[in-house]
Image (cartoon, rainbow, N blue to C red):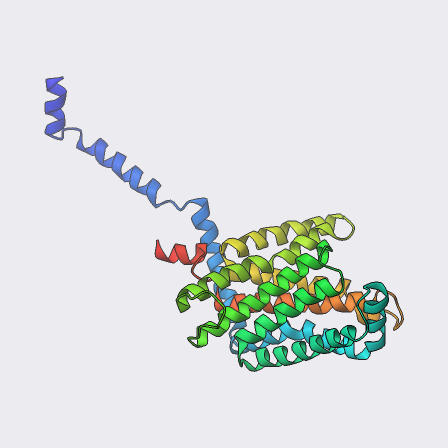
Amino acid sequence: MAQIRGTASYNLNGPSNNSFQNSRSEATNDPSPLDAIRAQTSKIEDWLDTISDPVKPYLPAIGRFLIVVTFLEDALRILTQWNDQLVYLRDYRKIPYGITHLFLLLNVLAMISCSTLIIARKQSEYAVIGLITVVVTQALGYGLIFDLNFFLRNLSVMGGLLMVLSDSWVRKKFAPAGLPTLDEKDRKMYFQLAGRVLLIFLFVGFVFAGEWNFGRVVVILIGAVACVMVAVGFKAKWSAIILVMILSVFNVFVNNFWTLHEHHPHKDFAKYDFFQILSIVGGLLLLVNMGPGQVSFDEKKKVY
């Protein structure tokens, strides 16, 4: 044993040790599968960034308009179907006469005024609170609060509104009354996280609605992966773009209300769904523009 220790101390076996160390370093330098995936997705993101450069300055404005377009359409629908709305609220929801008029009038005024403020980037905080209040009061007034599909879609719409809120805090320091007092950076971080998670609930509703076929299963699998990536903030921009494409194609081919007859019983439902999905697409576009925020794998990866 003393002889072995002595041989080692004089480094008589140096060449074999060096070859072993070289093989270890080569093995260490070999990229892992995860690193290879990250490298490929980074190339795709760079390519998408290059393509989207011309429209990037307009993404916030487009996103904000799409988010509120469902509220503008809803306000127009109430005005053009005023008597039908009154009959439904009075005869089916048993809301007293007079209160029905006030309910509809306040909803129309709130949707038009708050949507205009969000598009103009004026008082976005109060406008978001106003539109979220409209969503809640309509769910109660029309008796849709226990409708699972309606509930999930409106959670996604609220997610888009929260993205508007976090986007407005990027531009100015402001602490709205009634909200918890947090540092501006913390407010933006937590509201971005909440908005990001809520945006994917529409896709959860899509999974449980409609007939099953092979194409639907493929779309669900791709969309589910993209939803998880958006929720945890891993390659969130790339995943949000995938969801925008899936929802846009789905919206055009499934909610094509313009192909239905004027008196078709499902025309209003298809139109309502069409504009709601547009609102969620708007929230995803804001996510593409702002990024996932600090509470995400993308940001943690930059730190480490």
